[in-house]
Amino acid sequence: NAQEKNVVEKLFSGLLLSNRACLAQSITLTESTHPRKCLQARLLLRKALQHCKKCQEENKSYNFRIGLSGPPGAGKSTFLETLGKYLTSQGEKIAVLAVDPSSTTSGGSLMGDKTRMQELSRDMNAFIRPSPSSGHLGGVTRSTNEAIIMCETAGYRTVFVETVGVGQSEYEVADMVDMFVVLIPPAGGDELQGLKRGIMEHSHLVVVNKADGDLVQAALRMQYEYTSSLKFMRPISPNWKPKVMKVSSLTSEGIPELWAVMQEFHQTMVKTGELFETRRKQQRVWMWNYITQHIMQVFREDPRVKSHIQEMEKNVEEGLMTAGQAAEILLRRFVPDTVLS
Ligand code: GDP
Image (cartoon, rainbow, N blue to C red; front, side, top):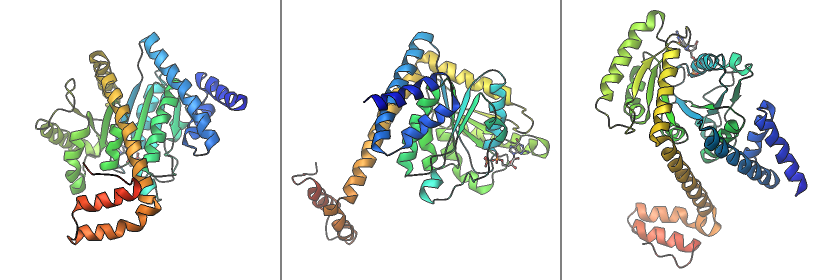
């Protein structure tokens, strides 16, 4: 109706003007579960998607989505502040979206409550958005995927998606972005050692931070160690050889070189078409992720199913039934004629 349209029109024109308050409101709208707001969000997202598509086709200019992950204390917020200011000083508009998986599982937040990236957040060409705290990880990833579209509509052509830690849920971020970057400290100890394989398997770029002062030697060793391990990894993309670079987010040393490599990546992906191929695939996979998550939730919470889950789990654990039989019994309580194929 007219009123919904009005709200959406206003937000959309605000987005086109790069208005940060409108951008924040638009993202909040997509996070809402209120039916009316959901309708508004749907209308707004449709306009936003159309706009982004048109921009891409007309200007042949392509935005850049970068995922940044790394253990707590590696220096992610310092790094983003330094790189962010370097970019805005060159006239780029950048957005930083935080994803904090810990806030959904533990209620606490690994990113902490301290105000992060203070200087960058005052920069008119930067937009910083903390992690949506409500809901489960599926909700957070959906919000973030839609927040990316909103940022791009508002002209923030470089979007960083920052997540804390290195582990399963962090790698979900890799499936939202064009380039996945992991930031590590120069001396990681045993904990980091155990994560090394995972880091290398997912990253287009490993950045050793804190390469300054007393830590320069350690950073060099770390860079060497990761570079040699990379030789034994299966390539993550046919068009890109993963790299290991070192920077200091305190002194900005290595930051311009790092950005040059990131741009080289982006241009290569655009030129080869891999960027679009990957994005198409990502969107298809997310759609099925959301469907799977939702159906699983509905299934588990269905009263006819719920009351029998424990019993069936016990039956299969104790070998009284096969897993297939138990699954079929539960599924039939949900959809009567199910036959497991
Ligand atoms: P995050 O938890 O990954 O976001 O890490 P922070 O950005 O909060 O940084 C953790 C600590 O490392 C802070 O005390 C920073 O001052 C310090 N730090 C970050 N980057 C650098 C760097 O390039 N060099 C040095 N020496 N310290 C840094």
